[in-house]
Image 1 (cartoon, helix red, strand yellow):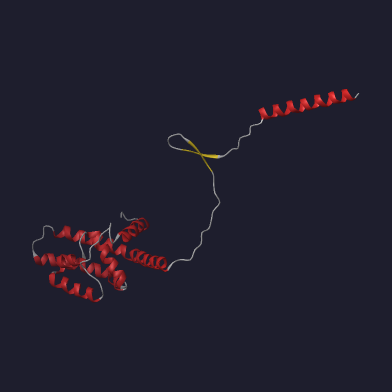
Image 2 (cartoon, rainbow, N blue to C red):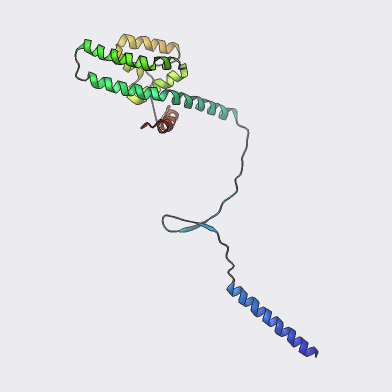
Length: 203
């Protein structure tokens, strides 16, 4: 009887082992993961990591940088439309003066456009701060390819250009300041491209 019981137990154990082996062959032990397919057709596994907040105390140098950058950005946002308009008008005036040799007629053309600009922009421009005025001069140079001194000299004469240059110096400005998009003015150039998108200009 004891031998028969042992035999039954052995048969049961062999059956369980067979079922376990059969189950292992039927059930896949893989884990499904997200994948990214490259343009070349390669498949690369990918996963998402939880967000991590990194907080630190801002340094004085960092704070000063962002304060100065924000001030510059605001100045560009305010003055860039004026620079675009000024560039457009100067281009139009130059086109009108191309075949005009009579000095009196030239002065009349310039004076009429000058009145137009004063009517549309005098109140707005006079409300600009000295800093915003400096940025505006930079942007006019960018739009026209000429500094403000040369523009004033061309349309109003050398005496007026010298006079306004003196006034600019008193307030810490310079009508002859250049515009270097890849050098000192690269931050302005970056902001201008953003402003161009905002206003719908072709930067």
